[in-house]
Image (cartoon, rainbow, N blue to C red; front, side):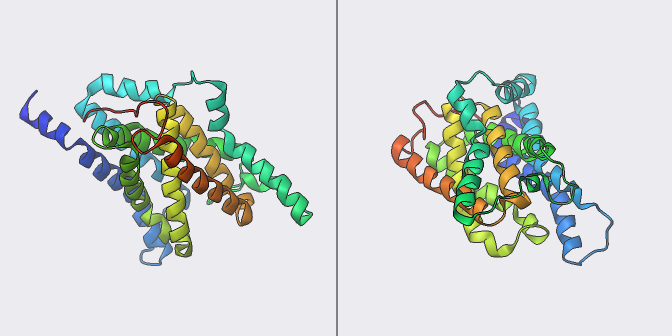
Length: 272
């Protein structure tokens, strides 16, 4: 191994985060400047969905540079790791089932049905119907999870406990979203959103470690959750209830499975 490759491997995590931010912010910052009236560039806002691919591209680039073809093949092996028990498959799509239970409860309490057609409404695009679910899975599901859980988490877990790795990753994951607060998110939700994201990070670590590193499982859950909460149908009480459930579950996971692995199985690790 030459000196250049050795230095790159030693700093691979730093390189990953720099690249993930740089690629995504190359899209997000111009959109933020347009939304804030700072520039008059003609960039369509639907490129927001390409923002999600920063973590994925950064993971593939850094893996290719440090691990070669074998490392990239391992990423896709974990992405297509579908051999899970029915219980984990059920959990991977559980945001859909939980939301429909919430809809039934709200129907009993409020006397009116939530308009499920609103689930297909996404920002900057026409109503996609059920296609919105696939949009979220193939953008912010796969695009983010190949990077955060596929690349960063197992390398952080190699150096520290699963919980500490998750907290470090969660903060960096939250900061990655910063430009979005200037063109899409309401800054007023920042505090609650941050705690929700950190809770989601804990849940993702539990799911990833428990499925022996299935990126498919976390990408499906991520996409399904966004399908609900990022739609017009998920605004208000429905999204708040789902986020609260995730927060409670995250706290329970820490006490049930303990910080070392956040799972009954060994934490997934990859040496830098």
